[in-house]
Length: 265
Length: 323
Image 1 (cartoon, rainbow over the protein chains, first blue to last red):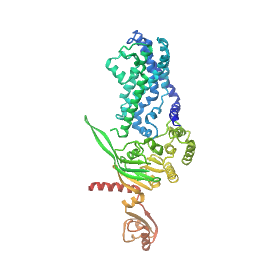
Image 2 (cartoon, one colour; image 1 turned 120 degrees about the horizontal axis):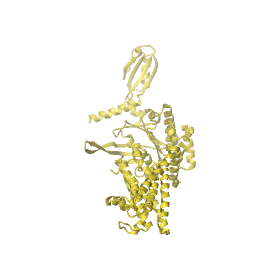
Image 3 (cartoon, chains in turn purple, orange; image 1 turned 60 degrees about the horizontal axis):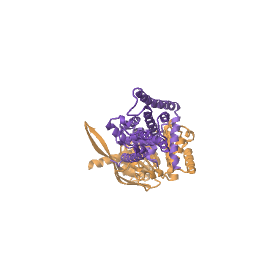
Image 4 (cartoon, rainbow over the protein chains, first blue to last red; image 1 turned 120 degrees about the vertical axis):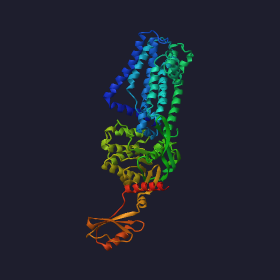
């Protein structure tokens, strides 16, 4: 029965969201709209230039779509961590510690933001469009890559969320800081990495492994050379990077909760 | 059930003075030692900031002690948090563990899967709580629409579904009306005696203690000031008892050795006498009094529990001053 706990908790959350039907519908629409606004920015950009960092409109749209889906899925589960300051201040976090379950999974399912599905659906549509436009030599491996990329990206984004939100255990109002990385990296990954200046690129690409969400996998999929000179196989390592990021995130979270409970300081 | 030795917990608090930021260490719990046997019902009282909540948080595995020894049901709460969680129930008066937007019944169902309660046990326990707490009408109401009293009854049911050996209640009756309070006390007394569930409760309402807890622990400034049966604490801090007699005819107070007449009322019809419980029993005293005067009515007044606790604080202050 243990394996059914989390699906049940998610189900409960969905039912409570449905108890506010009107606001739910509105949220769903707002989210889809938000996703399209970002799309318009890219389209406007390409009405003035033909290529961005050596990438065509469709290729950039593909990166945007991968990043959008990944971010949407991550937001669905890890986005609840934005509520962590409230949880800590109101003592709800203590209630989570009283249950025989891990604190992180409990928070993740505590408020599945179903409205984000609007965002994911929007990005998915763009992905299908972009994949149809760009020239890819399809092999089974590349099909697998196209499916794995948004999922690995979701794990990477979630890990970023967990790590940065852990700051709230030290500084309760650390949310602005965390958001700079979570939503910031969401925006960052929608464009080719080589358009950014070197310091930002290095931080956002390798320390926060945002470049592995969409940029490198897209290169591998398109069979393009990295303008920054990394070998081609790097584009296939996103799932590995995702696993690594998840591991780091789990450790950071454990350390942070330990600090909260009083052995960390 | 609970074993606490020299338990300490410090907090580091940031203090900023101008641009300088300093840390000072505040000791919330300062060397607390006590045991609670299985089946006991213990009241844990003290003023705000005395260290009650911090103790509770350490007992339930939320906070890790700074030092000291702590076992609850044989496990170390901070290290074996999840094992402990399956064996204890915790109710916080001011924070909910129910799902706000869902019907009460749904919260219970979710807790059943969280605690992996077998279906049959779950049914029996839930039915029992619903029956005794009168929750039939509220099971399908979203928690956010429940009254405070209904919600607290829901919280207690939620904490009992996995049949915990120990139930910890932090201010369970706060904000409740008299009727709801009484209902809760009756229920808690019942599960304590009938199921043998150990109770540990913090409260500001001393009626809770009087009604539920044969044993009282008083804490202040992180230290246990007193620990024992309520009656004994009373005897210890207020060695004098009071006898109130109403006479048939107005007259002077009877003169009995070892008794002080403190005041008279109603023109000499009513007299308040105090005597030391160590020296005389109420029965002996009454026998002597009725020999001297004609008594219409009499009553032995025990000091109020508030007075007992106030005196305990006072005694501690005096001791601190003498050191």
